[in-house]
Length: 214
Image 1 (cartoon, rainbow, N blue to C red):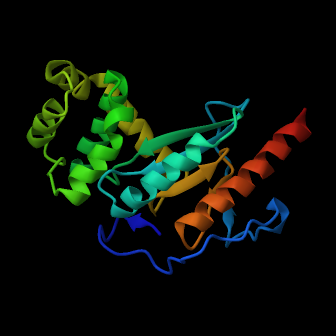
Image 2 (cartoon, rainbow, N blue to C red):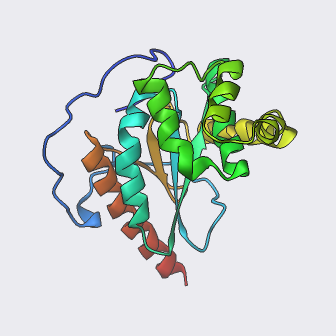
Image 3 (cartoon, rainbow, N blue to C red):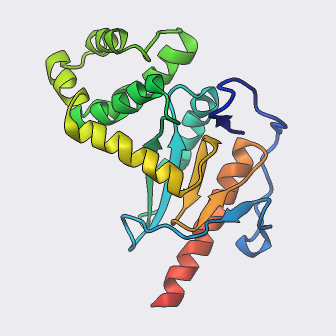
């Protein structure tokens, strides 16, 4: 279920037509339903259960997961925070669309245009990997082009992209989309429904671990 750094092509394997059965968190199988991060990584929001999605707009599987993940995120309780981390795998083209994510976040246009970015790349075949085409596209979609260009090329945005790649290395990310829970667990699953169901169970597990420390 990953779009990896080697192929940039491929398809999901074994997508099931039914939802995975909801099992107790304790019934999960390490190595199948999740893997344990070693070493565990610090989170930015230790008071909450932090979920990271490593992704790229250039990944077709990330595009397929996006609407399901958006619905899932909207249902999360207040003690769960979900953060997206666009990564590049060292590809200049993917660096541009990682910068696109962060620049839209800064200009306040991300919520409005994120689904449109996926649609443009994977449905309309717009070459948003190219900076000039990207700039033209955001202008056509109602973004202040001058403000966006200044933001896109800023030190702050480049630092965020670099930080995202550093996180990907720390989490040993080999393909996207990938979900991590509370700096401790990488979520497994044979299809998107199973992936999100396993994430729910790991959130319960992480919440219990936090409660046990109090």
